[in-house]
Amino acid sequence: MALTNLSANTDTQPTPYVGDHVHDVENPVQTLLVAERTTTPAHTYTIGETTTTVADIHPEYDPDNEIFLVAHPQPTITELTDLLTYPVPRARLELVTPLSGGADR
Image (tube, rainbow, N blue to C red):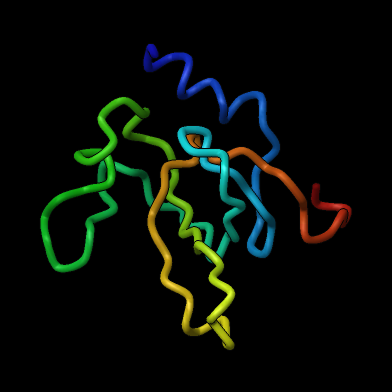
């Protein structure tokens, strides 16, 4: 798949907000929860204490894509603070269910 096709998702899909349910376009089976929307582009968002960026891990996506932290809900988790979050480029996410339909949408 060409970079332009993957990056085009940001132009055709509504922007997810915290609390929204999304799918990963590469693996749309599980519904994910948007935990945080950063303003950091993939080429500067580092993974943990390393110098590896999200753009290094996902070179097929535009390195300027902003990063969202998404959580994989688990039935055994009893508190939101127990959810593990993962950084994902915006173009990889597709909105499934918005948390609310506020005026900002």
